[in-house]
Amino acid sequence: MRACLRDRRLGRNFRHVGSADEFEAAEPLDPRWQPFWGTERWSLLWLEPPEHTRIRKLVAAAFTPRSVEALREPCAELARELLPVGRFDLLRDFAQPYSIAVICRLLGVPTDRGRDLLDWSHAMVKMYELDTTEAQAEAATAAAAEFRDYVVSLIEERRREPRDDLVTRLVEARVEGERLSDAQIVSTIIVLLNAGHEATVNTLGNGILALLHHRDEWERLLTGEVDPAAAIEELIRWDPPLQLFERWVLEDGVEIAGQPVRRGAKVALLFGAANRDPRVFDDPDALDAGRPNAAEHIGFGGGIHVCIGAPLARIELAAALGALVERVPGLSLVEEPRRNRAFVIWGLEGLSVET
Ligand code: HEM
Image (cartoon, rainbow, N blue to C red; front, top):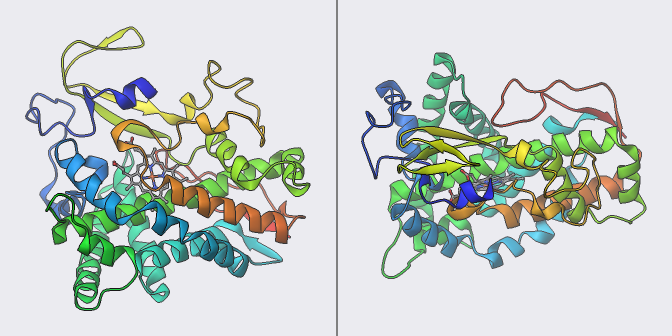
């Protein structure tokens, strides 16, 4: 899997090396969903070098380790503040508002727009699934248009009045004399929000469910034997929130695990399977909150598309798990949750718990 992620002959996009006819599985983009694909045009997730290299450098110049580190304390405070007690839905009543509050803090978006961000993001990520319906595509397109208009107004505001936030830093970022265009900033903000919050929410849902099913592992957190930051790595390994990413085969002569794959084919990389690879992890199906090499999981990807938000996700998730351990040690499951009906963005419909 790592070799595939690093192989430059496998790409997220083929347009820089060939036409859609050569890449048979590529469906033509439906013009009705143009506003959606327009906002995705400059998303790092779809770009390949040299565009990817240029945009990623500029985004990295704005989304710096320092700006992420500055969120450590706010994350811990928000997690403690937003954690309910009694009977509640861990996703709806904690993970979602928390993750949106963190992303709003990062971007410098007022939290009263949090609900809109959440609705837009939910509608838009349906386009990444394998079986998107027409109604979902329509909703995603409407959401993308609203989201774009909102971000454009935010960019204008920050240009007039710079602040200490990511939108301002993206507006001001310069690398070797280059800067991001407004369309590139819009795509970047949308991908940071969508890629960021859905995965963190589902890590908490999948992860807390795993711990409640494996009470001994939860106990290891309560006694302090295992640190929340270490447990997060194992939770991402054991039940990752993103299951599948695709790559196009851009050149002839590619072999994957000894199997030839022709140019133009599309390869599905199954992250959940790679995370249970017995050649990397001893007893891979066991949940071991203190697993020494858990951080070798593939959950954040690898190669040039490796998750740019991983340092933030780690801080944010460890703070949330830390708050749960400290504040609600008696947390228990009210009923078995149901899986959401998505595959790529892998999570639960809800997680009813009580403290
Ligand atoms: C547990 C949480 C997260 C997981 C498991 C995760 C996972 C991933 C993975 C697997 C990729 C690579 C996709 C590929 O190879 O095609 C990726 C890319 C990305 N992630 Fe994350 N992510 C998480 C949180 C975040 C957060 C919090 C942010 C931002 C605030 C973020 C922003 C991004 C972006 C912008 C990319 C595209 C990078 C590129 O293509 O150069 N992610 N993420």
